[in-house]
Length: 395
Image (cartoon, rainbow, N blue to C red):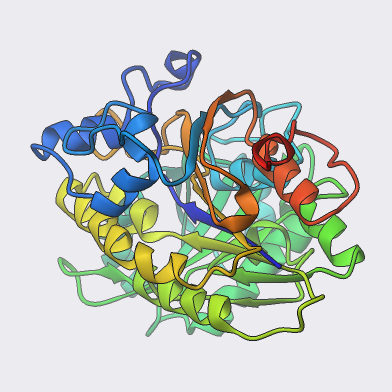
């Protein structure tokens, strides 16, 4: 018995009612992108029922959807990956995470120099690619790492791999995580290492990014699953988002294509009939490579590539398995007023023999409804958050 969670990072389905409070009025990742591109070609997602969830040009509603379909609202007052993944795993936030729109205060800057042995440059909210273009040459000249943040609760450290080896960059980020930004009032959800390479005018980030996160409140769906003897397997950056807790094993990936291949292999792995498995996969390219860069063409292509891989993934499900595809937030590439995540509903598609007959799931009040449903499917105790829908979907 396998339960599979596939997170299409940043693939939202329309602005939440409070989106204007986050600067995201009019955000609609799938809808706006589909209209800007003259329609998307996603025949496999269309058959599952993606077009039954929202108005997506080129993806009409299916007359008889092959998956249960709906959308989910985020209960947590946030629009970031950490909050989204935690809520999917049945832990919604009560208060917004700490953010630093004006950069980090002087005491943090001083502590960074004292504890890492390195002075910094930057210290402002910025797009990752833009600040590397802006300050990369100064970094090469001085050796000082580039520190920046965003609308998310993050402390990001960028360094050229020839100036600061990746392992040293990871060490610096661990120091920040453990000794500087480790508790309120100085806290962030994630300290992110951002290695880059290349020459001035042609800098490019490598795929050796690493996130150093705070752990979520206990227990999450993952904790509950492990303690009940379910094998919990992560694909992508998911273990980083949970502070490394709750996983038996996790494989980091270099791209969506790599993540899809790892997921296909995990689905085909043979296990004893009585062994339960939870696979939690994140496909990050929608967000990291295309959404934040407002790359509409690349985002559309990434969706089409996932759609083409979908039949092969679904073929790996056994008669008692279930799989769900959703997202953790939006990242509308057509919204040009900023380059941050967008506060949106996320799609919900649930398929496989273990999910019962396809049916409408409506608008769920929390991402936690999905995690609670997975808990029910796996025979776990009731989750700390969420209203399960799977029992009602099984005849």
